[in-house]
Image 1: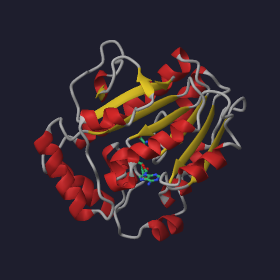
Image 2: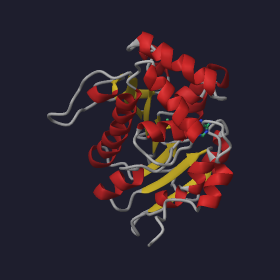
Image 3: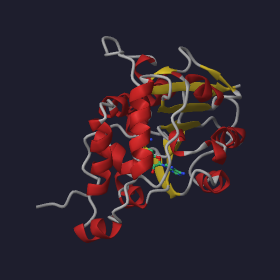
Length: 271
Ligand code: SAM
């Protein structure tokens, strides 16, 4: 039987299972993935037990990622992506969506979770006309990421920065808005920021229950934010229509379910 190239050897998996839950793997579980451990599943199940619709929220978030990349590639002519907080490989990773439309697209992925690093091979399956690379780094060190990304991306040409489902992992004291600004500052005009994060002000009671469980069980604190707070991350860009909205309502496909989910999402263009 052929080993699934995206799955690490069992010995590697055991080493990586520290018994400490991590957001990338909790998210993977809600998405229906298999790259998670008992501690992650425990957090994920406890959140669902509070009545939170986390599985629907993360699917809406992931679908937004796909539509945003398609929009940026097909309608805005973007051929370069810097995907921060990539997560575990799943269906429709950024390079797959972009390269289906423009095979020459170049993508830099980054994450700070060691298990994402182990699975990064599945992200390095670029079309030969383009390129994908992976940087293991903390997004709170943007200078390091921007330096290493230069090996793959041309910073004289527009780049789309993807911060999809990332900012709730960055607490206010780490200045997430300053972080987004620092990354955007390094990019030429005509670049884009695509960003989404869980909402504080949609289904507020259910989100508060989820936040309480996650803060109790996970070492890294989660920060849900209001529409106004999320909109501030787009400072220095012009939001494309329809602005910052619940993820399913951002440029939905015809006939798609646009039920409000507790995720704010938007895309802005740097002037
Ligand atoms: N972007 C993917 C998506 O939307 O499908 C994954 C989202 S997942 C909820 C959040 C990802 O951000 C995780 O893979 C996590 O490891 C990563 N992350 C969290 N804090 C980070 C940090 N400080 N630096 C880099 N990555 C981080």
